[in-house]
Image (tube, rainbow, N blue to C red):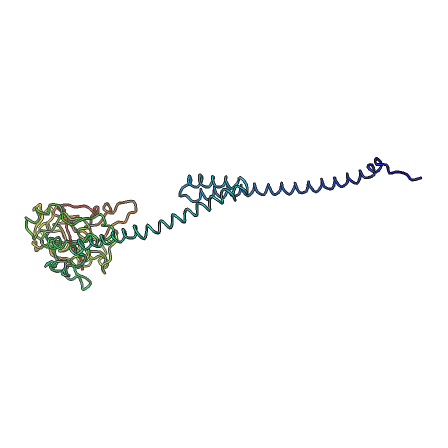
Amino acid sequence: MRLKPNPLALTLLLLPLSLSACADRVGFGEDTTADDEIGGSGESETLDGSEDSQDTLSTGSGESESEGESGSADTSSESGSGPDTSESESGSESLDTSSESLDTSSESLDTSESESGSESLDTSAESLDTSADTDPGLCAGACGSPGCGDCPEGPHADVGGSYEIDATEVRVSDYALFIDAAYDPAALPETCAWKEGFVPDNWTTQLDDDLALPVTYVDWCDASAYCAWSGGHLCGRIGGEPAALDELDDGNQNEWYRACSNGGTQEYPYGDSYDTAACNGTDLGVGEKVPVGSLEGCEGGVSGIFDMSGNVWEWTSACESAADTPDNDEQCRYRGGSYFSGETVLRCAVDGTRARDFRNSNTGIRCCY
């Protein structure tokens, strides 16, 4: 007798096999989920890292923290919204922007070639025309050269064969030649960049008075420019370099002091003992400037030099260099005393300091060569 298959029995027999297969499938699904979680964690770490690095760049740039914070933060939040967003939105926007940039740059090129370029050429041409109008009228060289006028006739005195010095203080007539030459302020050192001209205070009055009087009301830059124009320099170190403020009484180094003291051998130009009648100080009793070289007793230290003591103070090259002080306010050294000075100040070793732009009725010029 044939037995018929029982469907229920077959179902019961196959059920364990189905359950086992389902269990295996559920196990593989858990491993895949774990990988996705790790991957997601990696994404969040990357985003955190990119934000940190953007903060560092923003702070470290030091130029515009707000610019870095706003721009970078917006960009990182968009890219952090997911791979699809960064590729579809941010990426397409970047491409569109770059294409716009290309269009803009091409427009810029057209503009620079057609408009900006031609304007630049026109501007430079105008600059050339302007310089052509002004430069030829100014002197940037020494007297006696083309366009720089005649040289002063005042004599120089030889100082031990090492250098020369003006035999007298610069006269009004000498300085008038300098004014007529129209010396270019651009030829001055950088410390005199504030200067626009060289006409002294009370210039008309000085021209109307005795032209043999020492020129006064000149500042340090006026004196420096005049000496350069006359072929010399403000007295400094022997050899022509500027002196330091503390180089006062070295007869082997300082041009002005060596000439006044005959190489450091005497207190006054005329000797070691003070003479009230020798030079134009307060004890002479004149009370004002006198024509240069007019006092025979005020000759020396070196033969042929006059008025190294008294009459007017004489600017020298020594100036301070202070980073926090405007150039025109920096202190510069002048020497020799004036008609206001007494016994102590009229010594060769004594000096004074004034601001570079200082002008006064008792301050003048003497140059070294």
